[in-house]
Length: 204
Image (cartoon, rainbow, N blue to C red; front, side):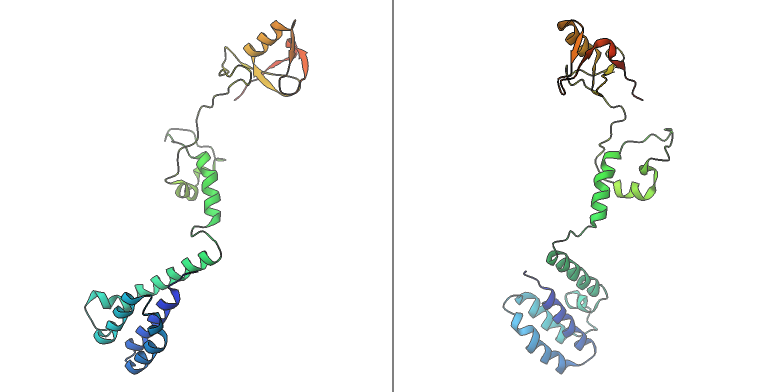
């Protein structure tokens, strides 16, 4: 795994020697630990050598950044990045990834006048934050299509429940019964029954 973490840590050790005024230690450290990297990270190497000349009190941004507290945050970021790569992990929490996958199904446009459902996870601010930016995948009004006719089932063409648990539209079952002397054969299970045995199904 190609990583610049070790080089950057060695540079920071060099910087700390310069910060403490131990210039001879800094030079010795550079010869021992930084010089071998000079052919790979030549630009960063020569920039780090400039730190030795300008010192911790410099106002030159190019070298002052090495003494800034934010430098440690960068080192932490590089360490985490390499750790994730080494263990084939994502930079984002897997828990967050799975939660967002589930929340994307529940995420919908909400009306302020809409009655609040306390069982809806999207009522929690923490989940609303996780769902921010996710696509709106929820349909407030679902449409059910008949497996037989591929038509939308409505009040005029309601769903009927067969004794075997399968659901089809009234028009689809009536067409089948008309062609088979009042008998219905479930196309998915082969179950046979009379049309009168099918019950109206109400979906709320």
